[in-house]
Image (cartoon, rainbow, N blue to C red; front, side):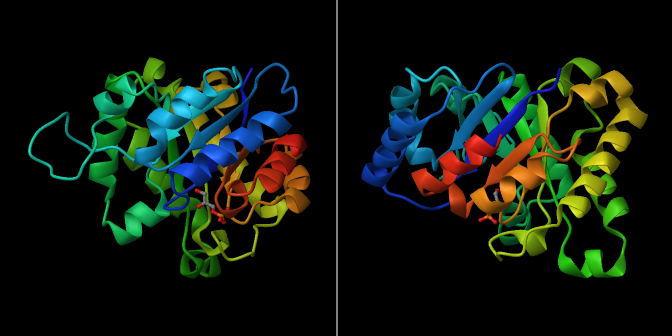
Length: 252
Ligand code: 13P
């Protein structure tokens, strides 16, 4: 049975004190999640060891990084390897976020290498895909997303695929307050599941968690998460305030 996941992507926000306070507030307000449901927190790198210590008492809350490098080690000043993340008790890593693709020129080939680094170091991957508004307006979003998924993960074997979560984040919905409608989300998530099924079979597709991201809030989360192929969310802005993020967790 596939997992329901609500994941926080803090992006480049919060200093160490603010991060500690937020985790503390989440700890105090966290509901019982029940079977097959989990929360993932992706703070900036500098928070990871502190957050790992804080999460030690929270069995349902897992730690993620927002990125890793595509090589194992070496002369890459300022970068962080997948092995370093593993040693910091990180369990998941976000790869392919549209902000990385756009601002840091991460292309499909680089993302596939990052996926390999993450998996070979025992990390699970939250692989992001999403179309810009121009693609949505042209009506070619399905092939756009299919191409991103093929390029990023289709080289993986069946066993490796089990460690992949997909996050569909339409770029026009990120940080804009303009959420995809639940129908738009459901249509794309069903498409993604079909794409996975065609390559890996129906069981693998049914077991894959596919998250929605883009202006997800307590007020729209329940409707989005009620869609049969939406298995939770990857949350940016609303993950920075305990009350809002807890509201989204409640919706799950
Ligand atoms: P917002 O929730 O702020 O729209 O961001 C979504 C996102 O990019 C999560 O990775």
